[in-house]
Image 1 (spheres, one colour):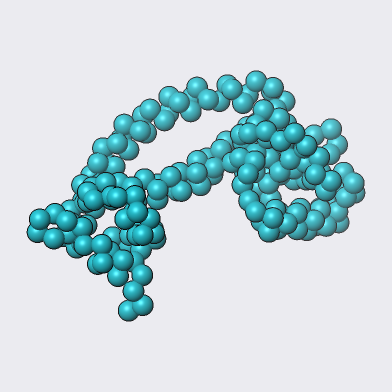
Image 2: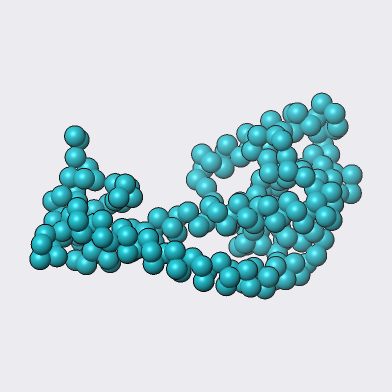
Length: 211
């Protein structure tokens, strides 16, 4: 039940959630949603590196903050891959810029720094101003075409992803139901009265009490 400690109990009360299963499902769905983006982002990053490896000999970079390195038309590209265009705040973007600068310095010992181009690649979305001055931001179709040379790849990859997802989702639904049932039982035992009412005071104390 540690997941209860990670969510705002006042919000759930304000939403008038009075069923133990609804409480558990709301928390679990929010938790899974935050995890899914990271997990799927990692998958798309691996897919992009694999595709670029097949086409341009791209490889996973050993440089901190750089996900992909490859050469095309006598230019060394260093790429930081993100899921979508709105992935970070100003501090995180500045950290990416620092990683690009450091990577250029390292690579510049062996090749001319003018031949090293930094790219923030986003697996979906759009950006109307790709040239950010010290790096390029390529999103969606532009990114997939950049790493593969195929302007239609961004739509081509959706079908096999869908087939695979169907297989995974069927098994996930079974496991999800088991978790909801188990957590609901635990929640009722810890936080509900004999008549089934949620003891919100206990929930808040479990979530926020100093001791």
